[in-house]
Image (tube, rainbow, N blue to C red; front, side, top):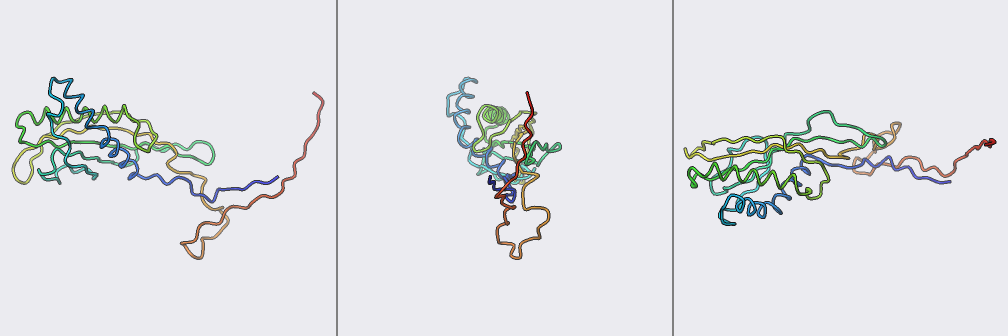
Length: 211
């Protein structure tokens, strides 16, 4: 009987950047169509609102971006919240990320800029909870929304709206991956890890008992 142990594989390498990319790619693909549906629902001509001109990933600051990139979609990932959950072997870990997705709308729309920003953020929320994220199987929950007015350096005021989500992502990492505990690091860090021992023969004892 032979069996090859593959625990030297470190397993999946899924980072916050992968989460951000999945959110951004999903919005790029679907948001224009969802915006058109939102415009129909509000009695507007589809295409009346400008499509996003900027797509950005950042920390928590919405005020870095200039008016020539508006309306802008901003993805802000705060990191992993709650305690990640390990399940079974090899300790596949599920992590919950908090992700905010916001829009900044140009003041040129006057009093309507706030209304349009709120419509934008609602359609982003619908996109993310209704569509599978691009390349990232996970559960998406809509957990909140807020609106604000931002004063930029040129003294103009812009409307912003932000939707908050949690993304429950499975198999972020393996707790039991990597080389065996008794080996030393490779002499050359660029070399791949050595596999665990390959078992070539196993002795099995079977006790026969009457039913």
